[in-house]
Length: 122
Image (tube, rainbow, N blue to C red; front, side, top):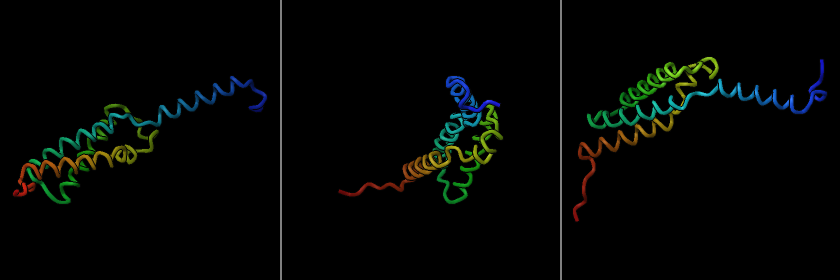
């Protein structure tokens, strides 16, 4: 068996590059999974704020919706769950930005629609 030093430099470099690109292409999660969670955050934030839903159950309801749509989108796009590390990795993709966006829109909509913002008398 030939050692890597005895092979021509271009052949060894080409093999490594092809293997690396093939590995990274199969282990990436499609960006549309994160986008679906962000869209869910905006829509759920507007609806939950409009109806003045409050408390921890609202946050748990949003997280359930976001994960449902994230896994549904991953299935639709065709993400290989075993290659990326399972459904847990897909559920964690884009969780913090989408949750922050949800809380921001939920709070702003609730305050604007239900009079929590008051104008100071001048």
